[in-house]
Length: 186
Image (cartoon, rainbow, N blue to C red; front, top):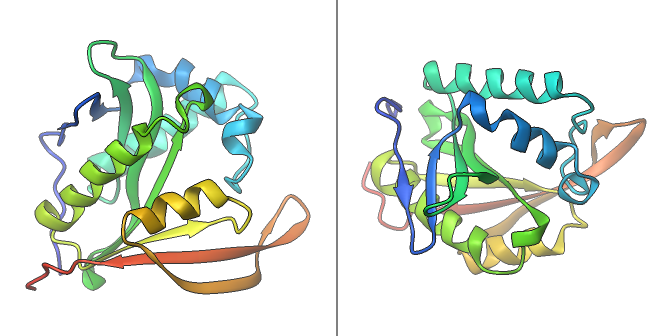
């Protein structure tokens, strides 16, 4: 079984990004992202309707971090500090050395390689420091950009589930991608 401890918070740095802890001061930007139809188009979760919705999401992420059951990074531009997206591991299965990765990004920054930078750093952290054996991603089948990003990062399609998820009055399909840690030595 892997041990997870996110204290002190594991800040990650890339060429252009600083991945840092999400703090209370980020709630407004979190609300802007989680209420944006473009951002949430393929994230089959309710859009934030009020700042309280974003505050509740912050609380969930903060509690999971405190309990060492999930870790979510704020994606920020170096020197700017403003939350432009999030990326993290949730549904960490300690006994299976496996976690699910999830991410979202400000539409103004999409298609410029920022999520690729963030994903590279987070995957490296997951495999090297968390000692994960595998990482999975649950993707809406219509999200071609996310599937392309995952494939670029060595993920392969593991499963296609038909109508396995009920959301907003409809049954939706899910595609599961995964990547195995090829350097794993459990």
